[in-house]
Length: 272
Image 1 (cartoon, rainbow, N blue to C red):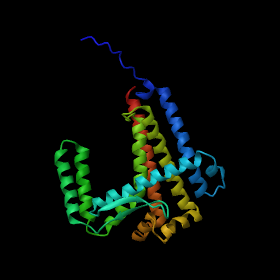
Image 2 (tube, rainbow, N blue to C red):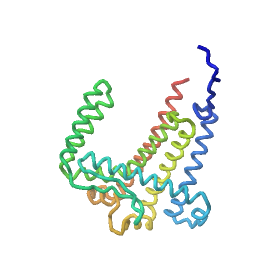
Image 3 (cartoon, one colour):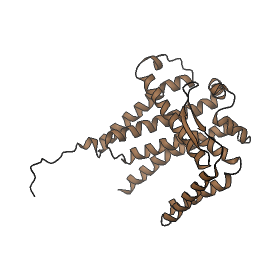
């Protein structure tokens, strides 16, 4: 049947990008990532850059990226709390800054049973998919091993900071492999936000290791002493201590940054 409608033209800039577009997007994403972290870098390393706060858009972009990092941080705590049977809600803390993952009650056995059932079902349903099947088995083993002792507190506390580089790596992977279904703008945002989150993690981690003022501010957050995740874990694992946990966090961030780049490089090498 003949149609009088003209064929829909799709701008390639907003669908599949060429190599030159890709370089442009990555370069622009790096610029946004740097700009968004200027205020945080100024704060952590006491650089005395008033323009980083007073000149738009540095302050506003930095504030927005800070809340985005907090959002994923608290989701990480929340996901692991539910995984170990604690009904938990994430929220921003507009009084002291940052956020909170607030458990509404103690551990609930019915939540644990639901988690076990979901993982066993996943193992059976995806039995033909090696990584998914054994991933479900590994998660079930972690749950059973630590659900009824204090060990699960480590995972709940660490998953907050860990969620930031994990999400950043996922966003960078989506940007590099052009997995954004809504085109170039979404791809650009994936790259910019992912790189900005990596920058914030490395600035925060290096500041905690080398800047006494930042370390003290972290220790005294929420108007308390030792409330931060790394302080809590350091008390739990004195052999590692605070600095050891921060080094592990930075190592995780480095791995999450390198893996997408390595996979992308391999995929391009396989095409030739």
